[in-house]
Image 1 (cartoon, rainbow, N blue to C red):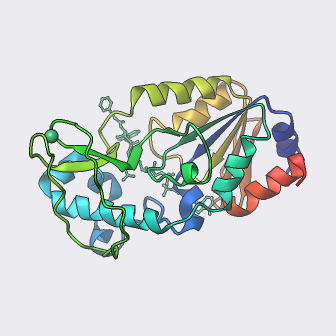
Image 2: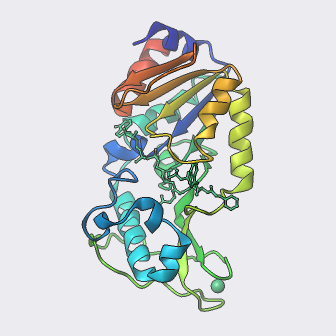
Length: 251
Ligand code: BV8
Ligand code: ZN
């Protein structure tokens, strides 16, 4: 384990953990791009995850999200999620910012998770925006490739949509501002399981690096690191995060 990274974690004052779909991969939740299988394989995610796609074919898009939501219902948090929850008990201050729309961080015990891209669990009306309660959490067989008619809003009768941020939609302003503020203030940022392609979320590690924080990427794909205090730990989050916790704080 890189001694400079271990030292930075042991002595950090404010740790920002920034996660992407890779942190849920070992829970069996397909990463954003892996989720496009079967019926959806022919779509570019950035085209399917849009309000235009939902307006054009609500059953195709709702079917995809219900399949993904059912996959999350079946999944359990993995050792990476649990280690991040444990880190919050070992450092003076931890801010957790996620791009993910699953609730595995919360189910691993993390508190106050900042979701930049919304949540699969928070559906709302496509027209009037009212929250839609009552998504079933029975485990019905997630039919890959099944088209599904979205529920109707009880207030205005319009179609209900997933509570996620689609491409071309603004991120929740308060969440984004909290993430940027923490990035400017932290002294160590752990970026876990993200390809760093999607903006403005991808600015979070960039702001941290510019503000002089140590930035560490945890990803099986080694990251080309530029900055003097930027490191890449090549490997799975479920393996590397527990090793890093043990090296910095013992068992
Ligand atoms: C906005 C919710 C404007 C939906 C998501 C050109 C340049 C720059 C920007 C743009 C551009 N063209 C368009 C844009 C803007 C666009 C954008 O960034 N496009 C990209 C494709 C270039 N952004 C937007 O549209 C955003 N909104 O800009 O609004 C605006 C401004 C004013 C007013 C109105 C509007 C909205 C972006 C949010 C989109 N929604 N999610 C859903 O989930 O269905 S993003 C979606 O993609 C996911 O949520 C996730 O956040 C992201 C995928 O990223 P990752 O999480 O990194 O996942 P990925 O699969 O890519 O990678 C997984 C990684 O894990 C890999 O690196 C892999 O190696 C690693 N891994 C695998 N296993 C493991 C592992 N790591 C560790 N351990 C393992 N075991
Ligand atoms: Zn409505």
